[in-house]
Length: 402
Ligand code: PHE
Image 1 (cartoon, helix red, strand yellow):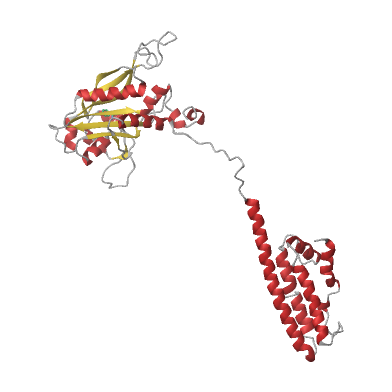
Image 2: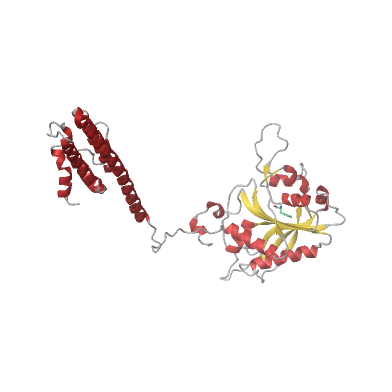
């Protein structure tokens, strides 16, 4: 709206009739009263039709508005404000001060004007609110044609990927997956695995014991291997058992290129009425060939674990030098240090003593178990020479295994 119109709308304030009494305005009959009220009403009707910006200029002009206040509220106060609103002025100057003969007419006109003003102000408030809302909606509309924000998607950690690979291989030959607690009792971590308290192998494996309140029923420790799940599984289920147990394990090791106080294992356990050493080596060989490729050879060497008898260490022919001990470029293979073989993991036939702890009949059942160190396998397969990189989580490392 051009400034001129606003100017006309506010003109009467220059010499505001509501600031004078009717007598001062020379009004002395009903006709004159009606005309005065009509004037005020016209002025109001003009203003109430303004949009928010126009009201703002108007109110600024009237000095009813600080530049940051809400113009609609200002307009409302200007008209119906208790202290100095136009309606209050009319009450004071016209109604209260009118001669008794005109009181009735002024009162009636006043009430009509008041109702009119209030209704219109309310309508105006709604109108402006809706408009503001529509404008906001318009402003905030989502433009689906804009290119999206690209959020880089992470990938599974290499250890997790290797877990998955190994799980898939054993899954395909009938093993299922179970998981168990990382906090164990000495009974499951040692005793039930045929490692009594005085046994020297505990020295290697003694680990992080938890600080418990005095009077706790049993000590607790971070498991040193996934083998406790052999016991927990056999306690729960009768043979046949074919499970693998992926998980984290903890030992009191000082960190270096091949040691970490936390690392990962997959335990395997198969128990049935007719499992032989052949089933054992066949299964392991199948796994190793699936994992490293068909050209690798395997071998086992005698070893010792209290919970397997006989116990073995499984070796794989060095996948880097093709089991020759000599690097492709000549010289000694650095991976197997010329040995042609790489030690993979420990395993064995379940020691009959273990069946005693889980109420299996050692005369009827037999089985094998293995414990694969995942970090070591991942390092071998992917040519990583420092175990610490698995725990540092440097994205420059992680990104190489999307
Ligand atoms: N638990 C043994 C270890 O952590 C590995 C193992 C598991 C050996 C099962 C034999 C059978 O060293």
